[in-house]
Amino acid sequence: MSYSVKEVAEKFNISPHTVRYYTDMELIPGVKRDANNRRLFDDASLGWLKTIIAFRTAGMSVELIKSYLELYEQGDATIPDRYGLLVEQRRLTAEKLEEMNKQMKVIDEKVDTYYDKMAQNKKQAGN
Image (cartoon, rainbow, N blue to C red):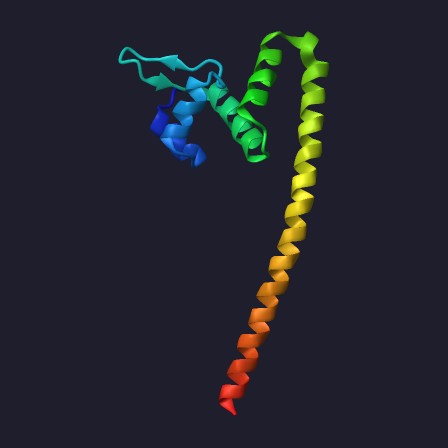
């Protein structure tokens, strides 16, 4: 089965511009073109896009994704290099997640403070 840019964008909840950008950056192997030069995606290219979205969401740069793809295209001899690249990205992502969890605690404290103040104001207004 093949999918259009619009269908792919809707499937992954991203903009058509983003889909085209990743294609133009040659991050999605196997994207074909129809007779009208429109991009056509198959299930394998959707798998790549899913991976790219995960990498980008985790903060991986386009350049690093390109490096990963280049390693992939070189074959199994690069598996240790790809493994190392992903282990490092996982470490960086874990650090970011830990930092975000710290920030979430601060925000939760502020939310609780304002909730308590509103409840207290409501109680005083009822007296």
